[in-house]
Length: 125
Image (tube, rainbow, N blue to C red; front, side, top):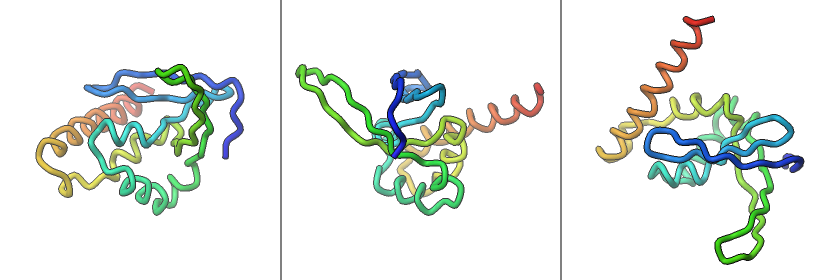
């Protein structure tokens, strides 16, 4: 488990969703379960996909986050997180054909944005 130091949670708007990004010691991680849930993906299936992938399983981290709930109580949760720079790779691994049309269109939108981001990176440097 990644040691929690100087932890900050950012909420980043992406398409119609909010991506929760955990910043710890200057490094950025994406909390995967909330992202999958927000996107309409089955969390357990995506967790298994990450654990089977030879690259993603090496960079995934469990990060403990303590936050104040809406009810005023303090909650501590452990979240499976990927470094932000690996998020596109995970998105490319999702098999769109396995999902219903509404979600499929949403996933295609995400993946197109990732393709464009990769293209722009390599053609602007």
